[in-house]
Structures are given as C-alpha cells and as structure tokens.
Image (cartoon, rainbow, N blue to C red; front, side, top):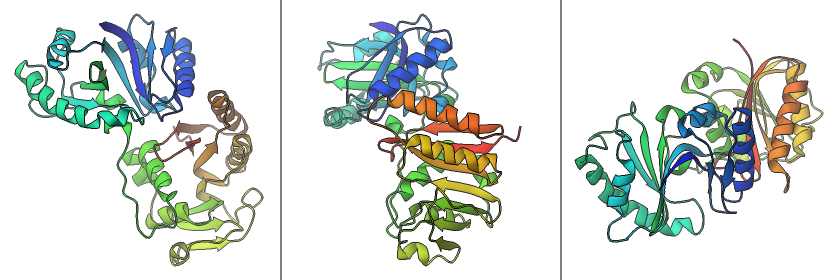
Length: 352
C-alpha cells in the first residue's frame, strides 16, 4: 500500500520524543500530520501529509535530535507471502525511479533484532532482483536515492527512500566505533561519536588542531579528556574525583581538583566539554555562561533528560541556552547511539 510521510529510526523507548519532535517541527514547516508508533519499537512513522518528499526536505536529518535515521516513506506492505516477498516490493517501486544503494534492515529493538538473519538473507535475494529490473545500480551511486526495506516481521515490510546527503550513512543510523582498551571509560565513545556526528570533516580539521586548549568539566575518570588529548589538545580536567591513570599518564592532561560548576578558566579556552550528571537546565545555564563570558569558542556537552516530558525539556533547555549565551552561536543536538537518557549538544561561536 503506497503512502506518503516519513520513516525515522530512534533509540528504543524514545519513540514518544521523536513523535513529538516530528509533529511539532512538521506543523511549524506547514505540514500538519500525525505520528504512528509503539513504545520500544525503535521507529516512528509520520503520516497524513500530501507530499512526503517536500516534508523530508523541510526537516533535514541533521536538525532532528531524536532521529538516528530519516527517510521518505514509500509503502507499507503487510501480509507479504514468505514464499514471494519480492514481487509486491517490485510492484510498489514501479514508476518511482532508480536507486543507488539498498539497505534491508530490522528495528533496533529486542523483538526486531530477531529479524537480523532474515533481513540479511532477504537483502541478498532482493539486491540482484532489483538490478535485473533496472531499479538498482550495479555499483553504489551516491547521486541517486538509497532504498530502505525495514522488515517488521516475516510478512510485513516498510519501503522508504533516503537522500544520501540528508541521511545517516550507517545501517539503522548506528555508527560503528571500536572501544579502546586503554580508554579511561566507555564514555570516551560518546565524545568520539559526537565529534563525528556533530562536526563535518572540514570542521574537525579546522576546530581541533594540535596545540589548542580545552576544559573538561566533571572530567573524572577522564574519558573525554583522553579523547581530546589524542587529538593533541591540551586539557584542564576539572573534577574533585580521581582520574584514571591512563589519563594522568598523558602529559597534556592536567588534573584540577575543583567543582566544575564554580571553576573559571585562567584564560579563554578553545574548547569546553562537559558530561556532568546534573539537571539539564543547570547544565544549559552554565554552558551559556561560558559563551557569554567569552571563556570558550566551541563546546560539546550532554543534557541528562528527565523521565517525563523529555521533548519539552529538550526544546526548552536548548532555547534557554541560546537565549542566555549572549552571542550568535551555531547549535546542533543529537541523541547519539552511545547516549542513554540524554542528548549531546555542539555549540560554536558563529563565524558567518
């Protein structure tokens, strides 16, 4: 059954937040509709719009906080015959053009992960069939849209299309990062992912240069300080708690025993990072102070979300931060794969 709307993946359990974000953002862009999802499903459909392509363009993936992946929804195919799933997919794709890549996926949920084997084997069968019909290029072509097939069950699939310039490049929108044996904590992966997701390659080269300096508030045991030091950035690690020896062994990390919410830098810093377990409004307010006082040029920080009204808290805290920073900023926010009950924010002094 053909349909119009969006399909977006998220962290299981955050479907209401993604649904609320899509609903509010779509209405503001002039595309009123409704979200359909279930708790812990790992995905949200946004339906009831006349032009899914224009809606997708109005809501860029990079600006959506709770969406790991965003696509234009093409068709909902329930009741598939397990003996022939390919024919209904071909029929649904008829007249919709050609694709440069294919991803056959399953929801990132406990129930969905049981479909991993089916998704893999069906992708191996579907790919040559699409190529034989001329619907899929022989080699990946990023100039063309990417076809997504989301297997919800053995007899149910959703078809969607992604603009590769406006979507995550990874299956299920999950980047593959390898944990380092000598990292002080697994939180190092959060900052590594944040730098990859919230900055472009050009920005990483320009904003993270050897010899720059940074402050890490609430640094212990030192995972985020360790990541910055590996970029040859000098770090003042501020925390009353103990640092891991692997962080202390890096000569460009200096441990300062102080309260991260009261400490002030001796001179302006290139970077501020903060992963402190505090209320999101308190963190947003302190981050705004750093920019208002001119203490940093760039920042990455986490906002720990409450159990209820998490979209409202996210929107309000980000607005509070922008309103009180006292200067024009570039602000981007995402719930990363390595985040849990939180979102990660990048902010930088606007140079344009």
